[in-house]
Length: 273
Image (cartoon, rainbow, N blue to C red; front, side):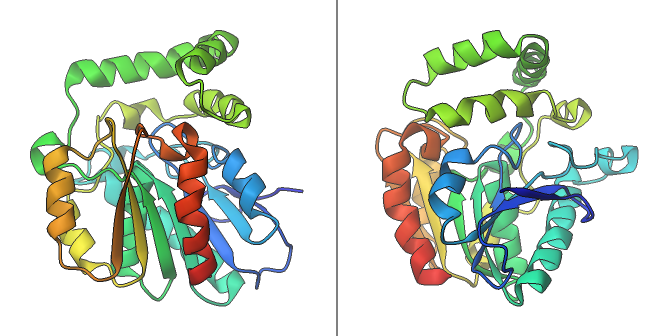
């Protein structure tokens, strides 16, 4: 049975073998999601790994951003610091480094932790990470307003939002829809209103500094990684990185093309846990 631990700085839940020495995979979600938003992956991985779904700062059941954090030079560093504290806790339980599996905003956090704390992170998977150049870091005001309004609509009409989500995303595993809808009603709207999802530190600086095996999956269609960013990433001389573009996938690769996602990620986990 999945378990919950709210004693850490961030809320998380885990599934899989109770023995914490079991290889541990820590899940870091994207903007507007939560640690519950990985049901298909948890179903596949929990027989083999201890799978831990973390609610990043301002998401799920984790604490909201403080006013000081929201007005700091980089609120995302507060999110990264909270995630690091939780990974420290989980790595101590496990007795060694963990593997991070991440998406979008969480991919940026996982990349930073892989670069900054190789003592905690043994390997990482970055699914369409939030690699935005500085001029694109803050989303346009109209995009931010639409995102906030969408989260409010999910909270006001979860059934209708689920039906629309099913119609808009026919390839998603059915189990993904309910936690996806629920997570939108749990977001810190003050944070969401900032229109950011990546660190001030340049993404390419972070990527160049990664020192652990890291699988990067990029969406062929849409997502934050623009074509020119994809080309620059491919030119970064870091032997620890394996960058793959998943054909036919939108921003959430594991939901759009689950079989293609797991064909790449599952062997990576087997090699590095």
